[in-house]
Image 1 (cartoon, rainbow, N blue to C red):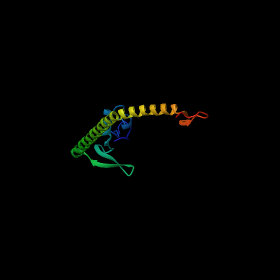
Image 2 (cartoon, rainbow, N blue to C red; image 1 turned 180 degrees about the horizontal axis):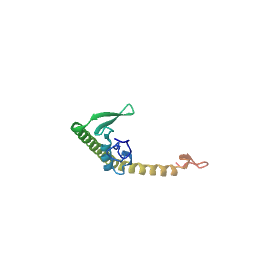
Image 3 (cartoon, rainbow, N blue to C red; image 1 turned 120 degrees about the horizontal axis):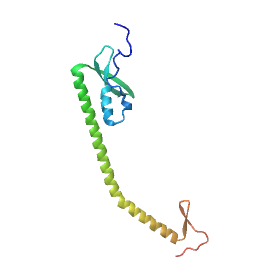
Image 4 (cartoon, helix red, strand yellow; image 1 turned 135 degrees about the vertical axis):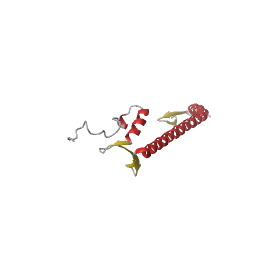
Length: 144
């Protein structure tokens, strides 16, 4: 057998794409699952998991063949379930925020009306506003 050339070497990944270059979320999922499968020089596909431990990415060799296919499908299902749970939580938080905003709207309206009344009373009593503070006007007698 002759020397190995780039054309005869097997590709490192089954997909030429990298996870970070995928333009859409659907393609990211396909690429992310493709990155977990590696081809080595000896041939064959190997399933490898990546996870974070103490801030570092740790790669865990799972295996090859039907067992690895089952584990890969299990991991994919787990990721999809976690994604669905995150979306449900995000929707629940959005609905709760909308409900709280609806409850706060009348209170804010009442607060603005009270602020207008306080300003009117202070101006009527001879105060003026200076740098955000109300101060008594100089030289004016206070009306009782």
